[in-house]
Length: 115
Length: 112
Image 1 (tube, chains in turn blue, yellow):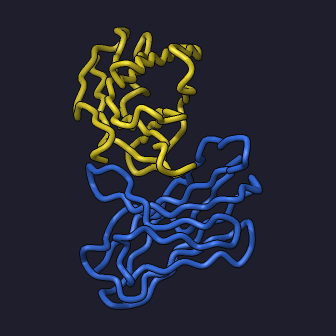
Image 2 (image 1 turned 90 degrees about the horizontal axis):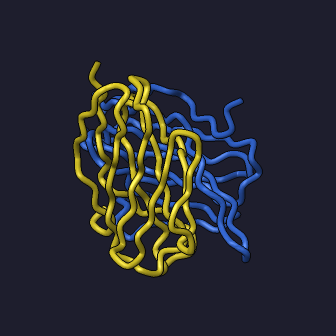
């Protein structure tokens, strides 16, 4: 059974039109991550939530926002998508504790196309 | 991904062994991971190794860690067509507790 679920798998949006991608998890992990992956590149961390605490990467554009209303769900909001934001967006979760870290589990990704 | 480096491509004949190599820069890395990504899909965790281990074997997969040289490798025995994918090496650097730093990925092509 899928443990990290991303919806939709494919999203087409218009240039400048706000779009939201969603992620849910059944693992009860305390950390949720959003990565952006462009073709033939490594995934790039945009931000993550450690419980309710939001942690933005220094080079993540302001155009990208995130919400985590509860443990299970996390959303990626792109306020004004540009053509350069077309990419695969990957959600991941992990359990982080004082005694160590579990591995990160990834969803299947949402492929965003901007037209 | 500049802290983790991988060769970009590997072609292997079906039934042969594949060896994917990775070098990393942070000698204090605690965990090192191998992920597999099939076309259009997310990342699937294949295996991971703690930094105090030299080797880990899991069915067809063997991970070797050389801490002195900061070199990690993944060996896939009896490579099958279903093993064709991009393989990412990742580490958790010591300057943070839990965020993964990925290499650029090695594209493995299995030919008949």
